[in-house]
Length: 166
Image (spheres, rainbow, N blue to C red):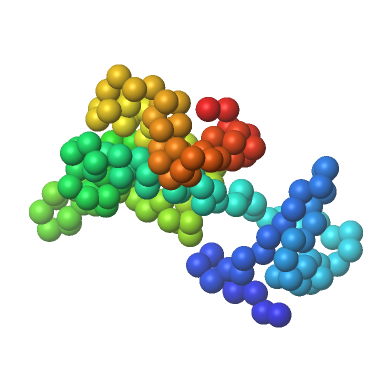
């Protein structure tokens, strides 16, 4: 099996932690491991698997902002929240010197879970301090979980099981 060298083309090797060791959790990871000689050292980078539930919560928060008349669309709510949260890049036009702030992506491929968690926490603070004033972030999060999960409202339990205490 040939492994691509660019991040964009990298295979989705999944690993599972057991105590102080890691084990392959899919065929791609196992094939990668087989290419290494026993006892050899190697360097790698790991990132936590992204939380689909937390991404659904992001879009639930954006829906709430649209429903409260703060923004005309989910995309504009998301872009404004990312900009207000500092998840941005600055683009400078070389011919005019004009600087424009653009929101960065929160897609699974562009942002690891740890970084998304930081953006998400800041976004909750921004939403509660700028657009839905007077509601605490824990209350807001629970409200959106109920909206996206329905009567079972399992989202809160999932966040807690991922190590968050909200």
